[in-house]
Length: 489
Ligand SMILES: [Zn+2]
Image 1 (cartoon, rainbow, N blue to C red):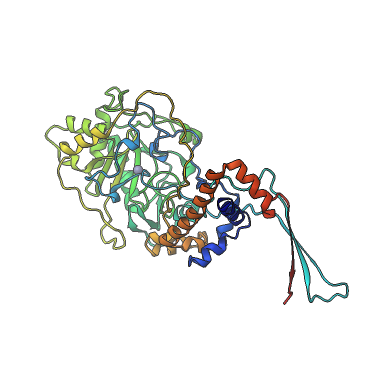
Image 2: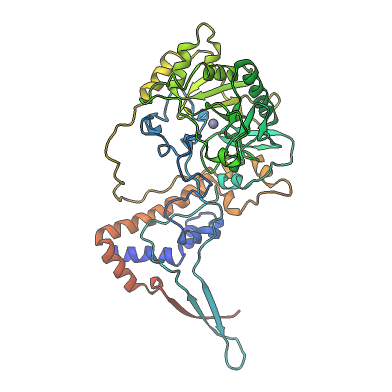
């Protein structure tokens, strides 16, 4: 009986959107009130509302770890994130970044109509207020855990269409920062073509953009590379991205395909759909010498040759191949670091520009070529996926709270000014200003409610419990009629 009561209470809480009081009374920020109700009609898990391609994108395998990798390639989980040789700040892609919540997703609130009937004499000392809540077709009391939604930094920076009209500055760190005064890499140049134009990620610090142009021309002229296919650089105002990449936030990172540029200008459609070739053989443990040739070696070596370039990230098998062919000139290898993914493309990162006081530098590479223990350890983690039956979905268990997204408060304060600058400013809702701890607390509260719901449901059997709850809770019936006598004052 107690379990049924708890279940009923939880259902009522969610359906009537009175969870607000739960959060308010527990000391959470009042700002939560603004959006807590929107969780009613949203799915249980944070939805990725980004423009991620629906099909696997080989050009950016990190965009959907695990899902987009061919079966012969080691899955990201095979490469532990707790790799001692790599501090988390070095994580160049999206493998440690939790999915973000949708930005200001419109709340699909039940249609509420109110009528006020006054006394026949026209007085309004007491009015009977009738509130009718129309059902949303197909909507039932939640069977899944419901979580409060938050406007994370990804959603805000993903909205920026143009750069902040400010002096060019890289602000913060590679994986927690933003970019003012970005400039675009032209989508076509004498020695490059920008790919995936729909993403609008061809923006960078002017220093990086100038280097990319130089690199493309050098590789073409000096190394016989036909031209660069350029992947993601940064968003117009930098910041975290809705899909892929933990870094690329301050306009000092860029991805380049290891596939040579064709000798014609790609159409916009081709730039969206053309697939990059994996450099690995069918084992996923070695490069394929038919695809990964001296041309790719020369290209990566060229990128590493610039003093501004501090790190280059490649798949461990590519690093191993570079180690084997480098010969006696090995100093550049120290900049080339093994990392998750990166078998279709490589990632170039430049140092904080001189005098960029707001830019948080990384520890420079030690100078060791990394061809000994480091690459061996990485390769040991690359375990080819075994052929086997498709994995079965995880059985339902106690609800687990989603990760706290990167909040605006996790970035340097100046990033708010970057968003808010210019006529094309990105509006910052109050709910985006919640701190990491506030969000965490709210999720913990919701987790407690969800757990109670789950336990009650498990105890009684979901169907029976639902029926009982519905019977006892008029608020959960499809048509809710509420009458109240309100004092008009
Ligand atoms: Zn990258």
